[in-house]
Image 1: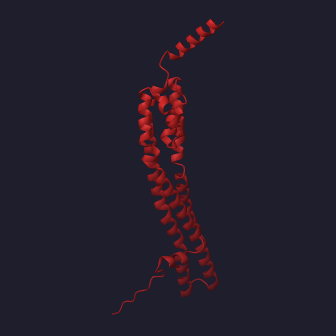
Image 2 (image 1 turned 45 degrees about the horizontal axis):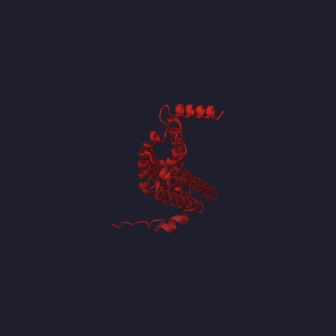
Length: 233
């Protein structure tokens, strides 16, 4: 008794890619975009870059009442946490609600920046399988067109139809190969961005009350101003 094995239709990745047709190229492009955006975000979403130790030191100075010492350095810093603290420093001496809102608004802006390119990864994770589905539909249409010319029911036409559909599915397979890892990477980066935003809030939070005017300070300042105005008159 002898058993025959049929050689696989596609033996290598190169043959798999070639068999999928022209739409394999834009799917490959999606994978390149995903890799580039993911690398950029992984390099950017590092705690040492987002919340450097110098910001924690600056907050300690603010709490100790020495905000003027670090104001210039923080204003020139590029770290997201430093920009949030700088927003509070610009409202130094204002009411507590004003300082808190300024820092919260800046934190929301920095959080959006941290998540910026993650939206691009989500987009590629959506587009890649759609391109694969389009390639499959086109391939199946071509396969049925070939069968229509040869006539349905013949052994040759049935084999051609099966082979055509098999090849057409390669684009969907490749699209899913790109989309699934991209979705996981985007979810991971999104979670990292949220954790870093929370870390910014935790580090800079103690500076809010230290930067705000003490209760009654505004009224005292206003009274002093009125007295000075009266004396001048």
